[in-house]
Image (cartoon, rainbow, N blue to C red; front, side, top):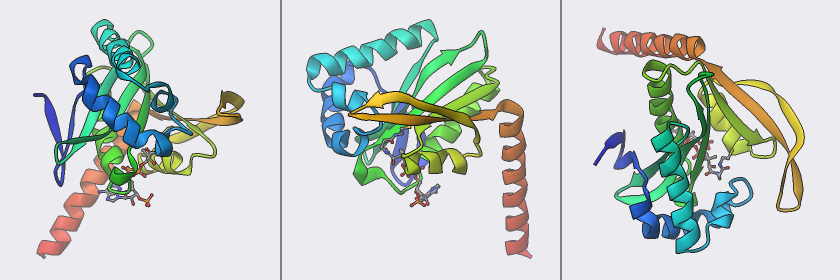
Length: 198
Ligand SMILES: CC(C)(COP(=O)(O)OP(=O)(O)OC[C@H]1O[C@@H](n2cnc3c(N)ncnc32)[C@H](O)[C@@H]1OP(=O)(O)O)[C@@H](O)C(=O)NCCC(=O)NCCS
C-alpha cells in the first residue's frame, strides 16, 4: 500500500471507501475532541454516512478536485489530512486536519502536512495553500504558525456550528515562501550537523 513514514511508527496512507468500518471506529474515538471544529466527525455516525463521506473524497480524488489521507500510528487509524479544495486551474488548495486525542502532541500533523505541501507545490503546481480555522481553535492555529503560514484575515462569524458563530481565520502559504523556508531549514540542519561534528 502507498505509505509515507512519519517516524516513530506513524504512517501517512490512502483512506478509501473499502476502509469504512475502520474509519467509523476512528471517528467515534475522535468525535468528542474534534467535533467542535470538524463537522464530519459529528455527521459521520454509521456505516452509511462513513461510506458516503469516504466515497465523496474518492470521487473528488478521481476528478482531481480533493484528496483524503489517513494517519496510522502502530497500525491504528488515528487521524488524517484532507484537501477540501484542490483547484489545479487556479493553483490553490485548502488543507484540513484532525486527530483523535491519543495521537495529539507528537507532531504527526505538522509532519504529514509538510509532506503533502511539498507534493502539491513541487509536483502539482499549487501556488497557494490555505488553512481555515476558528479563531477559538488554538491548536489548529498553532500548527498553521509552526508550518510558516501567514494570517490573511478573518471571516467574521462566517461559520455557524453547534450554536456558535465562529470567526474563521484564513491562513495561507505561497509556493515561493514554502520553498524559501524549506531551504532555510535545510541550511540550519546542515549548520547544526557541521557544529556537532567539529
Ligand atoms: C488541530 C490538531 C490536529 C493539532 O494537533 P497537534 O497534535 O497539536 O499537532 P501536531 O500533530 O502537529 O503536533 C504538534 C504538537 O506536538 C509537539 N511535537 C512533538 N514532536 C514534534 C515534532 N517532531 N514536530 C512538531 N511538533 C512536535 C509540538 O510541540 C506540539 O505540541 P504543543 O502544541 O503542545 O507545543 C488537533 O488538536 C486536533 O485534531 N484538534 C481537533 C480537530 C481540529 O481542530 N482540526 C482542525 C480544524 S481547523
